[in-house]
Image (cartoon, rainbow, N blue to C red; front, side):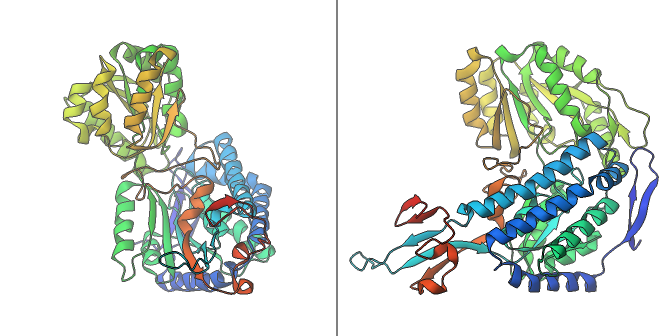
Length: 500
């Protein structure tokens, strides 16, 4: 068994960069233990000061953007334009959490006055959300910055007051190493405690990390099989811990009759092939009138694929779409162009009548990670309601409708909201804004916990848990709970929400 992780250039299939040594269990123990020690200091740093640290990390990443983008492009073939945008999204994510910390409502400070005259009598109660401890973060393959070493899980966990140990993804070890170097140096320069952030490499190191007693929660973005294995591991510990995994998603899109025009096909093809289809929000399942299939097929036929992130993904996509094409359930509508690159694939479009789809729903809702989609044709929107209700959990559900379809669109949305975490109207699901109102989650297998998001301001809630202080002197309470509200944050006092 190799003791190193080697990166590769997906365009050529050749090795890229110096191999990175896999982290042995003894080193995992040292890093996780150091993170637990650092947590005790980091968790009591005032939120406003943690905000400054996050901004300094963002500035440091921006300052080395040229190196990071060129390294990531050589390991992922995602293109410098896409990676430049993704890195800026990553640093903006850090800055968003600085805003979250200064605003302060994320701690959900709640104050109840004593009332001896009710049954049962109420003492003075003060409730707040406090950080859990050390968080293990598993990087994603398809977002080497935004869902990786310094991505959303790391940013939100550090913001919450938790320490972080990242398990780097094997598809981009050099990018991970360089990003970690910048983060560690920036944290040190900002005065954060030593060990508050660490990184490990290799599958075995990831397993050891989930098992480590210092780790109090896990964030994961990746495959359903990998996420399920780690979820089970986290739950089988002597002390089970929260596991927040983002896994597979088919992202159903419903095109209602009034919107089924040729113009919609170009937007679909662009969304389908963005990043060679390697987006968790890729529109892999489309419900449309049969009359629209030719236009959708022409749009996909006009596209060009690209190199997948690694050879395994390329082989998996090719095998799964070949098997689908060879089945007697679907028809092949069109195939795009495959460029002459080592791990390149072609976009592919298939179709199936809604009746056949419903009878074979489990098989036909398998995710094909890449630029492939299945069009489910219908003759009446009424046929869709029972089918949509049976879909597996998904990150997004999209409805395209003309004004004449609005009543039907509302009914479709009511069905989709039970299976999807984000509902989109007359737009495409690829692209996830980093904002206060974002929700990036959904029922299984989209995520392991549909109540939480991995993107947006409220993703911080995964790493904090409630603590109630009963009858404590005001001077001994956290600043967020003191009577004078010295931080000026929003609080709920005797049931009334406000800044008081």
